[in-house]
Amino acid sequence: MLQPGDVITLNGDLGAGKTCFAGGVARGLGINERITSPTFTLINEYDGPLPLYHLDVYRLESPEELEDLGYEEYFYGSGVTLIEWAEQVEQYLPAERLDIFIEKHSEDDNIRVLRFIARGTRYNELAEELVQNDRSGH
Ligand SMILES: Nc1ncnc2c1ncn2[C@@H]1O[C@H](COP(=O)(O)OP(=O)(O)O)[C@@H](O)[C@H]1O
Ligand SMILES: [Mg+2]
Image: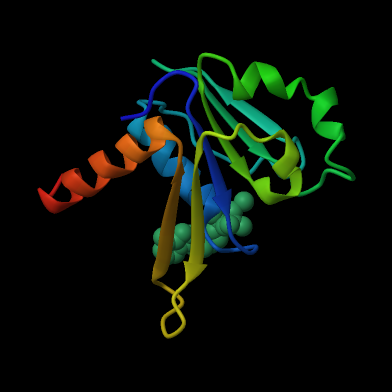
């Protein structure tokens, strides 16, 4: 369902499952490489039918360092961008995006609770489509 230019933030504590979720998105996009955490590299790029940009800004000393990364090329480019710990760079995020919050279930460490917050028309439609597909078992 993702399109060129889509931006998704992945939020949640260390170990919540952000990188694991990114791996699922990559598989859905037809990327065959194994997705690894970009915690130390800040960004990993993957080639596929749609390029995937996977950022993890946990180690940024300050939000302004995002400018050195050339973030506009990713956020406003022709691939799909996933950003872990995006709340740290809130002021640079596009106003329209999909925010996903991942938490461990309070009673079972093997279960995750995901909350999707769609910002803007494109992402409201995407979220709606996700719910529809889920209901019809896809
Ligand atoms: N949806 C899930 N259900 C159960 N376990 C998960 C799920 N997502 C991730 N995990 C487990 O949690 C661990 C941490 O996941 P990871 O994606 O590295 O977290 P984060 O990137 O948020 O720090 C993984 O090793 C995996 O075993
Ligand atoms: Mg991670």
